[in-house]
Image 1 (cartoon, rainbow, N blue to C red):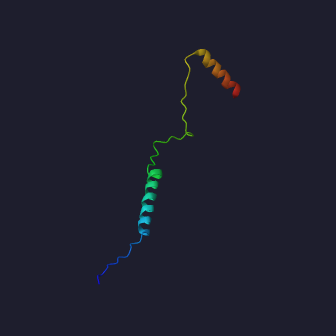
Image 2 (image 1 turned 45 degrees about the horizontal axis):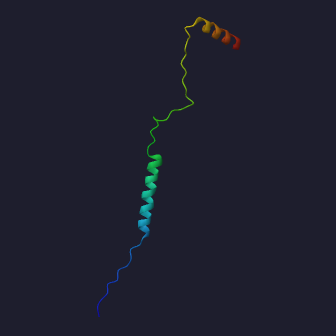
Image 3 (image 1 turned 45 degrees about the vertical axis):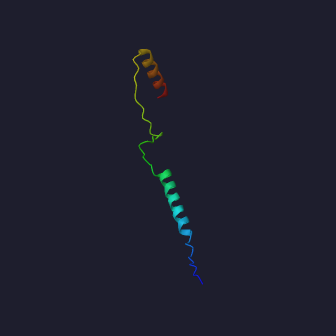
Amino acid sequence: MAEIKITKKTPVWPWILLFLIVIGGLFFLFFYGDTNEDEFTDDNATEFEEVTSTNPQNNSLVSLLTSEVA
């Protein structure tokens, strides 16, 4: 009689595990990989520049308004 070679199937779960690890790594890099904080601005830290008017009428109005508030 002829011999028939029987080979065992290799398990599939290591390939599934490898696939899930690779997909998880890609998702991590996509969502958390580029955290360059220089691109973001903090809206709470707004800097204001003091501006004085060259119009004398505006200057007197501003000084009048500030004296009423104080």
